[in-house]
Image (cartoon, rainbow, N blue to C red; front, top):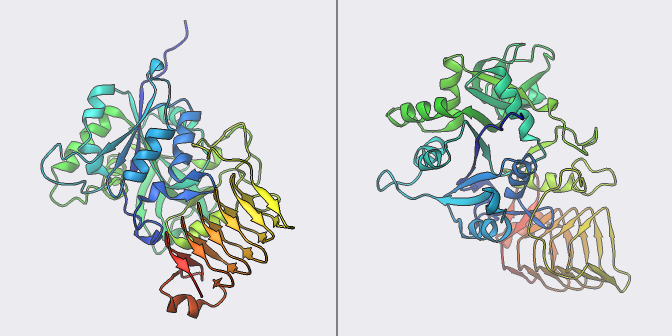
Length: 408
């Protein structure tokens, strides 16, 4: 007789404000920010869970969640006949008149989910990173390891690890320390020049997580944060192990995009992740049909190129019309229009934007419904961009907010 599958509840933390992605998050939650032409950021974690057959998923939301809630309800419909669901869970003030005080408190205030599902294991993942992962393999490693908590870790150069939560683990994967942005990150037992950075993805044995959440809720000194409080608590008890993300084998992946993971929490990271998509041999391959990224695709005709309009090393989404313009190293979301003589380079153009004749756009991000007048420039002169009130990232990427008309 086949062994029954363990009961798994997946929780996606989607309540962050995303301040570093402003103005893209000025009126939408960070996980609802469009990405890759036709997706939202949250589609990547939901696709990883769904592809791994973990299809009882609660998405904890809080800030500016209307766009995110609508996307989930319209896109992520699975067979209720088989007990599958993706459901948004807003802050409900179940424990009194207060919003979520942190990621751990968000789960604690949603303890009714545990009662309803009675899971053996709880998967807790973030909502806004770009990657592919077979979560079933991480669950198997959690069960085999026998620890109460498993933290996904990605190998990064030690010189870059100061920007992350760092996992100091022994050769048998047991976590010795969990360090927040350490000045001198510890190396790995098999690679002293690399460190494990936390991906913010965790798997817990349910009873142990429930106990930890109650203990944390009673602590007056806690920030009620998963990475800052709950994980260090398990480490102190000797009950945490690291899961090496490089061991994850995703069907259809290639050597170039194996173990790809990007935190797109800043404008520069968001822009760079888009540039990873568009080369001939992309660093992250959206076209892996063995592990698809699912979303609600625009019901529009295919992109059209007229009047010698061209696009090189670019993604051009359905509904776009390129009427004589030149697109290079860029990503265009659905229903964008580009007029004759316009030039767009190394840019991300979101839904319904209009680029007028002769306009020039370089290293820029245009949010939805932006109108660029004929002859206008964006990203060409950063001082001029600043004078018009546009956001300029540390890396020199210009961002134009939703619905703005650019006239000069």
